Length: 379
Image 1 (cartoon, helix red, strand yellow):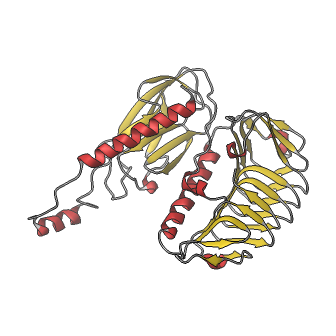
Image 2 (cartoon, rainbow, N blue to C red; image 1 turned 60 degrees about the vertical axis):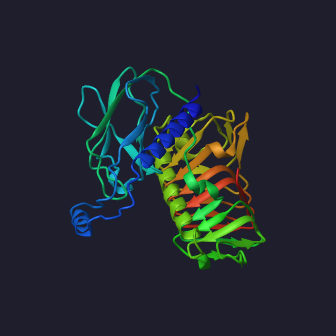
Image 3 (spheres, one colour; image 1 turned 30 degrees about the vertical axis):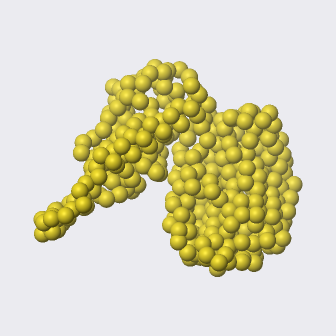
């Protein structure tokens, strides 16, 4: 079974178990209840009517063997959890014979928590994962007891899976503080801003739909959403921005295969699939080529800025696809005139496409996005 199929099976089983759990916990309609007793219970607990969360599935499974050295470790809960309680303190991974938790990044979304070790795991070793009672549900209920499981690594490195974008993947451009264009640009896919409102979407000459759930623009083949539009748009955008931040953290947390390639200058290089990491910025002064199959993954972890020179391009060969290329940028991304990038561009600050620059992929910024006579198309 492929890595993709294993992941799919895991989530199907988890969701089915979750549905069974919810059905099992359906209570009576409350007729004839003692309201004073209920009030006392509510005062004693965060939510007296809430169920106690449980772990319903894990990956790797308990006592699994021959686990890949670059595996992540995850658990699915019976209900939504309080993401602030799922941290490197409440979710840990320890190698047998040691007591120090392995350095890792912990992310959460849609009832699933994932731990991404900072480096490849040791081969032929047993590890214990633990989620403590510090983990709480969205209703404030803690696990009844710490949950632990073990697994043993083999010697192989599995093909990486794509970074999970969640509902952020419904957008070709998503930003927190605004999206602007110098007409005329051509955008294919939905765009959205949150928590800022539609006033921060400029240059698009928006035309509100009669429902006020979205707008349209002659420059956008898709819909335009903002936090001040009618329901369910505000809630959907809040979830999408949360998923964006989770995806950014997950991409940043993957163990690196190659470190400091080209001292941050990668123009003219041909790059095989893998996770590339720089503690500096990255510049692309001339074309860079990514060569691999349609299932291969590239993750670029950039600690500072990404700068693509005028006319420089990202080229895909061998069947490589844009939706499997992830640019995780802790600074800003600047694409100079007529430059072109393939992939999902995730910036912790801003993204700027200068005149005629283009992206075949998606652009996610935790501040603002600006484009100038640009072409942006979802993969």
